[in-house]
Image (spheres, rainbow, N blue to C red):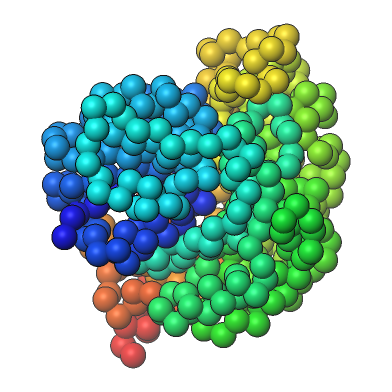
Length: 439
């Protein structure tokens, strides 16, 4: 029985796909092992969102060869689709598979015998036109369930459409079936993932269902206590979705909504499909219906043409906005996108300075959001990660709670009252835990 190990770079979508590929291996008689357990095969799932994909890929290959010098190393994922030849020349790489091939890699590589040169199986991205059902399993208390893939948008900074192809989705029937299977395994929380999750509903190039239809059907699935939407574009986050989540017992009051810039000028350069006014309206609607809802924001700083005034416009916009945390990315040039050819390049020094400013703002936002919840009662789903005798869990509105480790609490939901923030910025609720531990 050959041993196979996996390593995943990038987003929740990649994690769901790696987990599914792992199950395909196990169904074929391979033994799934840890990265350091001298596997016969490594599968490295790559990301292309930032400009250091090559550096990370090389480092992981090098580390893999330290643990298992004779292992067969396979590279899949977005970076593999975009740069197959470049990856094939990394010392130690044996095979590179593109977007259309990655789910067939066991059939394609079959014996996993090393050849003189690395094998490349990467069709044009236009051939990545089928949807492959994927979900993570066995990794943590929550599961990442892929409902959508690819993207029809053409943002000027993004390579994802080039790496994953056009927008396409699973059917509602199949997603509900997967959610029911996940529920039977004992998992309590599902995070819906996709490249452009809110664009769910396109099959064979035609829209046949909608994301709102999916949300309504998943809300009926027995056995799952919590659903979260991993990320949704502001122009696709309709009032009907917000209203439904507000009255749902299963969909959590937590949205992650990419903004990218608070300057309409920069949004236009980015080819985003909304202006800042729409974004502010979405936040206001959420907070009106769910005052304690958690709202996360993606922001890119240092985009070509972003002046200091434009950046300050973004900073002030976010500072005044009732959001809970920021994911901040300094702009990085990606080949075959429009942005690198645009005038007004921002120095790396300024990109990093602006990113640091927003990260400090994010910490302030997060602390303020946590403090607003002190004294309130929530349900916490505890996870099985234990560090220094402590375990962590999440409230419905994504406040991270820490408690003294108790094996009884793993993957269990408990009603607690939030008491105070500790030195690490995590929420405590000691008064309630003492009562719970008596039961």
